[in-house]
Length: 344
Image (tube, rainbow, N blue to C red):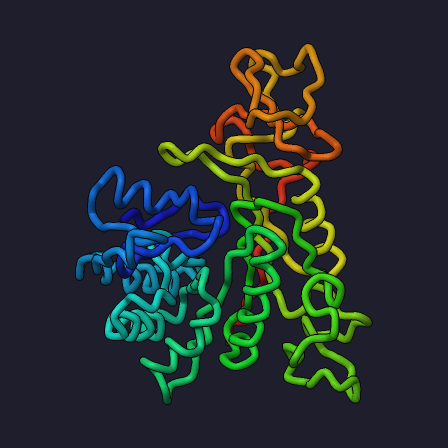
């Protein structure tokens, strides 16, 4: 369990336990399952047809690490971001409540760390937190986020995330659009709540009697309703599961919606596939000799590159060259933003 992480949107990762259950298409190529089950044999990953799987709590020595990180952050005057849990899900209802209670006690003991609690189960956040902390308020240094890989998951998960945000008042709320498997419209009201939100993130009802104060300022209509940070990324290969390509316009749409709303946008990675302008000149076959169109296959080889045949109407040029070469640039720009966090 390394102290530092190569994940661009966090400074450290902490796993209080390992193990989870697949619940959505984003889980198809789960790197945690491939690492912890297939390669290390540490746990059995759950999923359709195989049951809930198993969970394994990490060592006491691992649990002491955030205490040391907190001390260093206090001495340095910093507030590093800690991704919890990269090999599990904090709000997995198969995890013993005692483990989750211990985790939140640890979060309370480390106020100089900003804890990023990312889940594919946002509907469980309030319920499972209240089962372990029915009196204490939500820790001010913990943010909540959910994975939304396509519009269907956005419609489901963002609603649950914002309800949890309104109830718990976390440090901020964020989305992980990784792996990005389809276009996502985050704008209110067209994309998610055509009839208006059930309750505004400011606590104001949707009756129209008062203007909404989303994101600290009134907007008409409010955009990216209640979300403070958007992270996007492509997919990587995990064993027998081969990465699905993401359309460049899907990233551009998230970038542009975030910019219009003043929301921090972070492009983590392209994954195995990237647009032609990101392909290094050292890679052979940078410019294919023919234009590829949609077909029955998934990709077609071009020397040591490949171009997807996935039925996209506009058939953009994206190439499979491996995650070490695809980079993080979108239209020549590095998007590395993080949300601002109050010291209060």
